[in-house]
Amino acid sequence: MVARSIYRNEPVAGRISAKAFAEEAGCAVDRVVRHWAAWQDAARDGLVLDALTLVPGIDTDLPEGDLWSRYYAPPGASSDKGQRVMAEAEAIGASYKKALEITGHRPAMKAAIWGDDQTAEAAREALFSRPQERAATLARALTDPDTRKVAKAEQRRLDRLEYVRRVLQEQAAKSPAGQAVELSLSPDDLADERLDAIRDTCPEHDAVDNAYDYVQELLERAVRADPDLFVREQRARFARAFSATSKNIQAIDPDDLMAVADDSLVDSLTELQTKVNDLAATLRAVSLFHPRVIS
Image 1 (cartoon, rainbow, N blue to C red):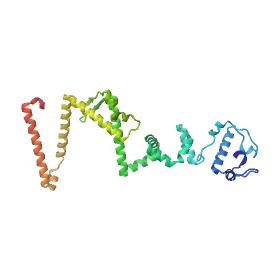
Image 2 (cartoon, one colour):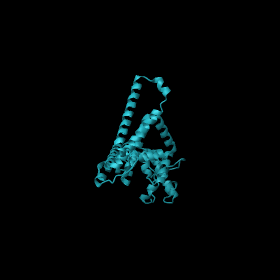
Image 3 (cartoon, one colour):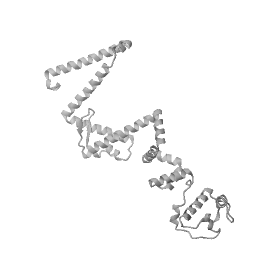
Image 4 (cartoon, rainbow, N blue to C red):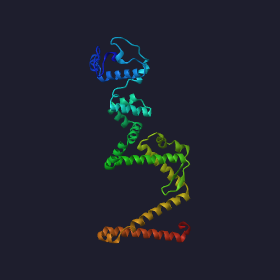
């Protein structure tokens, strides 16, 4: 009816404008125009006659109904934005109708992103694939404290998630002192709900933190079960603490200290010296009676 009844651009005798047709049909002008464009596209492919060769009121043969969807574009498709959306949908093998529908329901799109992790991940991937969006997001992250905090928390979640999944795959982990420890996880360990939760595609922060803490618990248990490993772990931990303390003390400039010294600083330094002397005396005493302990 649209093809045989309306004219486009220049008036044609016996035909009416798309606006007049829309008013008579009780629909939007854009919908009428989209039907006209679909018919003309089908005509260029030889499926139907050119619209201007049809006579108002005279029926004509129509192609199979399922072919119509190849030519009829959803609302918004005729705009520049619609053309871009359709091109991107075609490039990734998605439904352009669904893509155009989403552009018309932005509040619903926001709700889906807020409520579903996989939808949010798809949105994030799409945004970050656009250089201008990636640059703008990074700029906001560098200037906004809340964004930096969220980004830091998300990176922490991803790091812990990768750590736990690697432990499950290799059944080994590094201790806090850097020693490689075989965990030999039992079926009960592997079936623990804390580990089971991180097998989701995108587990929540709490689930990842719980799994990470459980792996640390298993690691500590494995270290304590091996006396030699436990001793090496403790020795490495104390060596690291002594080294950090020594570096911090050596970094103090006596002249700067003298400029701000007061009774509280003197008392703190005296207490620290007493503690160091006590520890050294204890180690010397132990070495006299149990030389193998020190060695």
